[in-house]
Length: 337
Image (cartoon, rainbow, N blue to C red; front, side, top):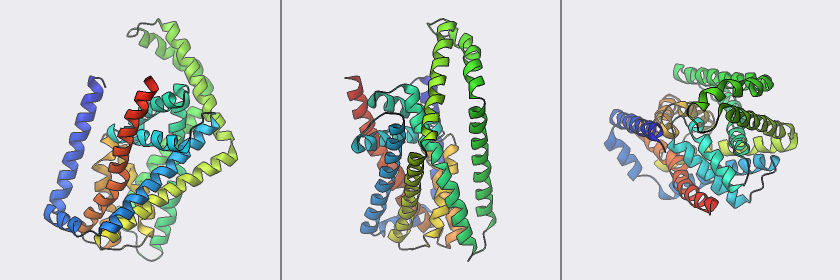
């Protein structure tokens, strides 16, 4: 990790700690601690188990995507690799955008594949996760609105999420439409600039970039044209989102405040918009977003909501951090041997 990356991580971690501290002070530390102390250990364990089910579902997604690219992995290895990718996402600013290069390097080492193939694999998982998440937001909000008025806060969150997703999808579609021009022109524009700082000459850099970009777009096309596999991948993504929603539902039950399972179906995907902030894995931002969305939709006390959110984030953030950190280290060592 170089100097700028280290500074970005320190600043992001500092921002996350500050945001969490503000949340705890506003809600009340004593009340949060009391709610956590009264939690049902069995239901907390159920929450953690559902978090592992989410991790397993999305690791199978990655395995299926890589299979379309002729990169074979066992179920166990795919679980460890995706856990390592989740760890990379959770310790770098801007969530998936920050962690994808690290995850791609891990995939390429373990799967003995090109770096750009690994990047296509993890990027495809992240992009395909958008499809079920948007569907769940609209289905969940629609079901919720059928019995309860949708407040301004939820409406604003839905509009913000739709706008952000639309911008990302538009950017992806634009690059894909003009991919031939990107391969033809970007290396020529970037090569001379990078040549000033690299030991290779500009022509070598330009040729290497053109080759990598060509392979990158070719791999994306291979994933997108395998329709049966693509449907299976999207189904696994849906299961992953539903496991997360079930985990949040179980977390509320553990705190002693059961809520309608419909609410987590749209609240969980909406909260991940906060992952696009310069915070490691959205830490602090996602917790605050969850509390902000759950207070007006559940009618539960803010202290109990914060406690439930902490249990939930323990299952989907901290447990994958521990597993992913260990697996990334172990897989990285074996890759160099």
